[in-house]
Length: 581
Image (cartoon, rainbow, N blue to C red; front, side, top):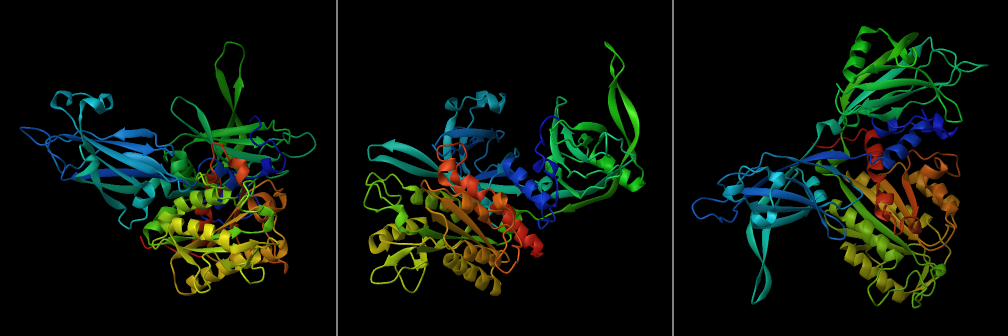
């Protein structure tokens, strides 16, 4: 088993297939580890299948209509195009519908820009595999661009965009409309289908000298070529030869299909990471379903060599595996809620305490560089806002500041960033940036660092929306350079807000020691408790120091936003809120 779960505390927890990631997101303790595992492995995500059609294409052939093909790309942040795939060639059509589908994984935490280039394939290449075609030998008909998010938020998940052809002339560069392309997206059914199982064993062998075994299960899938890929493991049950583990939840997407070969291994836990194999079975989900219906157990076996040069044989054990429960259900996904009309509303609160330094000096965290290079606050606003703006229809964002003294006033721990005394919303991400720079000229940095007032204000907006029947989920971004002063008040506000449709993203900027801030993030410090002893109903805070991800492969946006779909689904499922799909 190696050291895949060697640490004594974390190693005893279930990973990758428990209720936190699927049907029962309120389950505690072991399921906190599951959520960390799922996020680190790219979950939750959905496989999206794109279908393409076009209308009004340019007719470039002399004696017939064009023979169009689409090449699909993703655009990286640096502008580089990465080819995803190509459709087939549709003969003699300026209004084609292509049969070939393109599959792409939807990742909420990044802006996935798609580029569609349409080509007229010359007759002499019609018998050539489209993957082998040299695009510079084909006639370019036009290009369309959109983001995957723009498609997924539409109720019918279809988006029609103009195809443009950039041309050079004596009057300079200009674009000519060359028809339209329609992109339709469907979420793979395997993203939604979930299997719940309860597994138990009987008559396990003793593996410890002075006590019974401490068994746990590891479920792996066998992929093409015979490689074995771990999918999940159960919690460890101490000192038990007849263990019954907590429910396991597996999506068909995780496994591949119900007929996919699986290996279920039972190990005896050792804190040094060298776990003893007690025995195993090889079954598909379909086989396990039959085992459940029969109410029979399956004997575990263990590989045993009969000597040098002889093939590996198996020893059948008295120990047996039972499937006490096997149910199959369809879970609504994050994308189902978006298609059903739910929105994410972005809000931002900015730290104006004096510890940021004088904004007029280059060493200040609030310094506005004349060259246009963004400071840490501008970076965080831009990168988080550029992802979330697609999920907010009116693009009007509440924006506050805290820890400053407005002109002729006392220190405020929640003032409107735009300087208004009547309304707190600004227009778009650009509006936040303009209000931020204006506030730097019109307030005096002060202190201390208090989060409680802005969290309470955001919570009141979420509460009012909920009372009015709004289909909104709110996301508050707090950007700060220092450790929070009102820690208990902040905890109280977060615990109270955990019952509301609200998540809080905190970005720490500068060189402060943010160790205390991690207490607010349940991933790092455990579930929060208020001054009255009440425990947060769910984890709604995600904290990341900007320097931890600066210049690395994982951007601050990905680190912050990766947890958001899980928090959203936890809220919806625990309150049995269904999307209208």
